[in-house]
Figure 1 (cartoon, protein in one colour):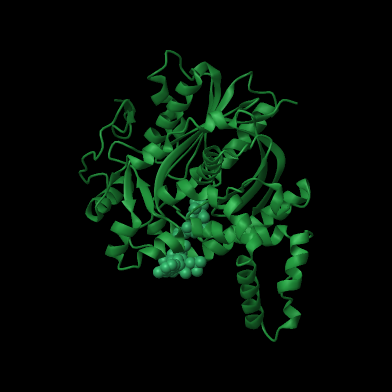
Figure 2 (cartoon, rainbow, N blue to C red):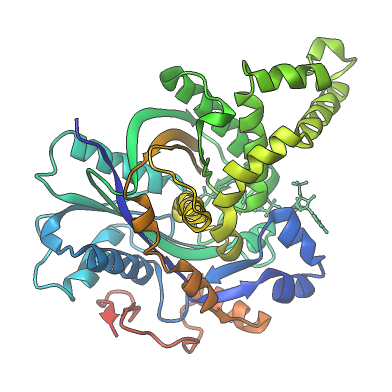
Length: 440
Ligand code: HMG
């Protein structure tokens, strides 16, 4: 049967930047390296006064359609994944379709539209829905447009404040795709959790430390579930492993856990077994504390092995380059991780066609999904179309006072006056809720 997957992607970053080392750390009285080395983040993106989740999503989608020479008649489905929606009835996809209809002679009346919510994993769930819709033959030759768009803001003073971000990723899902083929090799880890939630509130209530444990626990379950379908995975099976990236330090932990899991039954593990033992066994220790200490030492030893460091440098590190500069984009996060990896391969001349990716998506609440993708022949031409580096470079660099204003206005108090810091250039702009966004 025909391959189905991601044909093309476009990325739109919020046009403002908060520099964590230069601007944020001094105000917080923190060592800048807590952010740049500990969390692995250098900056966050924020939306300008004329931007919101609709305009960022519409601008990414328009650029995608324009570049691929598509009109609304080519698209049979628009799904928007977001956890920043402002309307409890109308899905954000109707607002985005409304924007796009301003620039085409056709409308999207034939298209099925929806909004997907499950924290950050909703972007991947929308991809899965699009894949299933096409595989079921209900698309009548049309493509699906998936847009993941968020403004990820925490209350000022919350430990999560350093991990904020804003941006959108638009993805075109088609038969015979250029970028990656999706497959039925996937697994889930899901449980009712309360470490990150926003019940009728603007900013999340977060237990940050617990959220990291929940992320790792669900990711591990998803990997085991994936292996029950696809068979055991090994470190050398995948060219890249893009994870959901709330901050790169989280992926450092997920990468180590994944590697530890995968080296079972490989010769690498046999070598390591002699060096550090396969795994501490609880019965060998006096109490739980001593056992946990032994586990930590075991993982630290593993982390310092040359094999692990080489694997991490090749398979994980290249997935983090965009996230380091823009922060957490919630639903778009794992998709910019995939884009970072493919961009890195194109820039370093790696031939990826036919190689496999293992994609680890996650959403608080909580659910992880692990799935495999195969890189298609057209990947390089497609990924070289991204202009995300120029967008990141072109952001307006906020002072701390400007940041505070932007923060409060965008997700909290719309009465605060704010001028544009950047000039809109042939793009959709926010003109106020309830009114159609306009293209300037
Ligand atoms: P914190 O408690 O302020 O930071 O916030 P910390 O003290 O734990 O330090 C962070 C790291 O920096 C640590 O590294 C420190 O050692 C290191 P680790 O030990 O973990 O490897 N560090 C330094 N390194 C070098 N030089 C220094 C220095 N100082 C410290 N001078 C926390 C961290 C994650 C709690 C906070 O950012 C937070 O609450 N974030 C929001 C929640 C979050 O992102 N959770 C991640 C998992 S849940 C998820 O991904 C879902 C999510 O995207 C939402 C959704 O699905 O919708 C969030």
